[in-house]
Length: 111
Image 1 (spheres, helix red, strand yellow):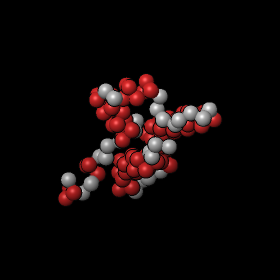
Image 2 (cartoon, helix red, strand yellow):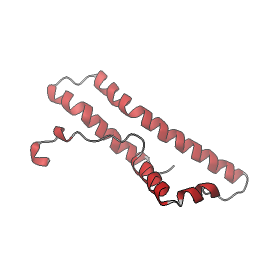
Image 3 (tube, one colour):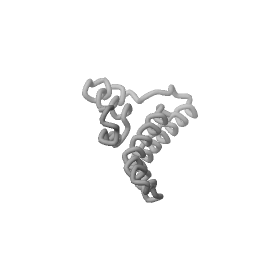
Image 4 (tube, one colour):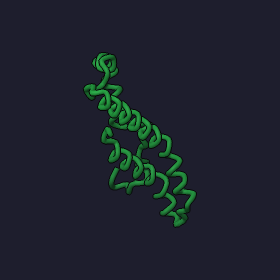
Protein backbone atom coordinates (compact mmCIF):
# COMPACT_ATOMS: atom_id res chain seq x y z
CA UNK A 1 0.00 0.00 0.00
CA UNK A 2 1.53 3.29 -1.03
CA UNK A 3 4.46 1.84 -2.95
CA UNK A 4 6.92 2.36 -0.11
CA UNK A 5 8.62 -1.06 -0.25
CA UNK A 6 11.31 -0.12 -2.74
CA UNK A 7 11.91 3.20 -0.98
CA UNK A 8 12.42 1.43 2.33
CA UNK A 9 14.72 -1.17 0.73
CA UNK A 10 16.93 1.52 -0.80
CA UNK A 11 17.05 3.43 2.48
CA UNK A 12 17.90 0.21 4.33
CA UNK A 13 20.79 -0.27 1.89
CA UNK A 14 22.04 3.28 2.57
CA UNK A 15 21.86 2.73 6.34
CA UNK A 16 23.62 -0.62 5.95
CA UNK A 17 26.38 0.93 3.85
CA UNK A 18 26.93 3.69 6.39
CA UNK A 19 27.34 1.14 9.19
CA UNK A 20 28.92 -1.82 7.42
CA UNK A 21 31.42 -0.35 4.96
CA UNK A 22 33.72 0.94 7.75
CA UNK A 23 33.39 -2.33 9.64
CA UNK A 24 34.08 -4.41 6.55
CA UNK A 25 37.09 -2.28 5.69
CA UNK A 26 38.46 -2.95 9.19
CA UNK A 27 37.59 -6.64 8.77
CA UNK A 28 35.57 -6.56 11.97
CA UNK A 29 31.90 -6.64 10.90
CA UNK A 30 29.87 -8.22 13.69
CA UNK A 31 26.30 -9.00 14.59
CA UNK A 32 26.41 -5.81 16.65
CA UNK A 33 26.98 -3.87 13.41
CA UNK A 34 23.92 -5.56 11.90
CA UNK A 35 21.91 -4.80 15.03
CA UNK A 36 22.94 -1.14 14.68
CA UNK A 37 21.58 -1.08 11.11
CA UNK A 38 18.32 -2.56 12.35
CA UNK A 39 18.13 -0.02 15.17
CA UNK A 40 18.75 2.79 12.68
CA UNK A 41 15.86 1.70 10.46
CA UNK A 42 13.33 0.00 12.73
CA UNK A 43 11.36 3.08 13.81
CA UNK A 44 10.96 4.36 10.24
CA UNK A 45 9.84 0.93 8.99
CA UNK A 46 7.35 0.57 11.85
CA UNK A 47 5.88 4.00 11.10
CA UNK A 48 5.48 3.25 7.38
CA UNK A 49 3.95 -0.16 8.08
CA UNK A 50 1.54 1.29 10.65
CA UNK A 51 0.42 3.92 8.14
CA UNK A 52 -0.07 1.24 5.48
CA UNK A 53 -2.16 -0.91 7.85
CA UNK A 54 -4.31 2.10 8.79
CA UNK A 55 -4.97 2.89 5.11
CA UNK A 56 -5.74 -0.76 4.33
CA UNK A 57 -8.26 -0.85 7.19
CA UNK A 58 -9.92 2.36 5.95
CA UNK A 59 -10.20 0.91 2.46
CA UNK A 60 -11.65 -2.34 3.81
CA UNK A 61 -14.25 -0.45 5.86
CA UNK A 62 -15.20 1.67 2.86
CA UNK A 63 -15.64 -1.45 0.71
CA UNK A 64 -17.75 -3.15 3.39
CA UNK A 65 -20.06 -0.12 3.47
CA UNK A 66 -20.19 0.24 -0.29
CA UNK A 67 -18.57 3.66 -0.12
CA UNK A 68 -16.18 5.08 -2.69
CA UNK A 69 -12.55 4.45 -1.92
CA UNK A 70 -10.60 7.68 -1.66
CA UNK A 71 -9.47 10.32 0.76
CA UNK A 72 -12.12 11.95 2.93
CA UNK A 73 -13.37 15.36 1.73
CA UNK A 74 -11.63 17.24 4.57
CA UNK A 75 -8.30 15.66 3.68
CA UNK A 76 -8.82 16.61 0.02
CA UNK A 77 -9.46 20.20 1.08
CA UNK A 78 -6.43 20.39 3.37
CA UNK A 79 -4.06 18.79 0.86
CA UNK A 80 -5.19 21.25 -1.80
CA UNK A 81 -3.14 23.89 0.04
CA UNK A 82 0.24 24.14 -1.74
CA UNK A 83 2.39 24.03 1.42
CA UNK A 84 0.56 21.03 2.82
CA UNK A 85 0.57 19.27 -0.54
CA UNK A 86 4.34 19.72 -0.86
CA UNK A 87 5.01 18.55 2.68
CA UNK A 88 2.85 15.47 2.21
CA UNK A 89 4.50 14.69 -1.12
CA UNK A 90 7.97 14.91 0.46
CA UNK A 91 6.88 12.77 3.41
CA UNK A 92 5.58 10.09 1.06
CA UNK A 93 8.54 10.34 -1.31
CA UNK A 94 11.22 10.09 1.38
CA UNK A 95 9.48 8.44 4.33
CA UNK A 96 10.28 9.16 7.95
CA UNK A 97 13.91 9.81 8.91
CA UNK A 98 15.54 9.10 5.54
CA UNK A 99 19.22 8.20 5.91
CA UNK A 100 21.89 10.07 4.00
CA UNK A 101 24.78 8.21 2.47
CA UNK A 102 28.07 9.11 4.09
CA UNK A 103 29.94 10.24 0.97
CA UNK A 104 33.27 9.86 2.75
CA UNK A 105 32.76 6.09 2.33
CA UNK A 106 33.05 6.41 -1.44
CA UNK A 107 36.39 6.42 -3.24
CA UNK A 108 37.57 10.00 -3.73
CA UNK A 109 37.23 9.61 -7.52
CA UNK A 110 33.43 9.33 -7.12
CA UNK A 111 32.78 12.52 -5.17
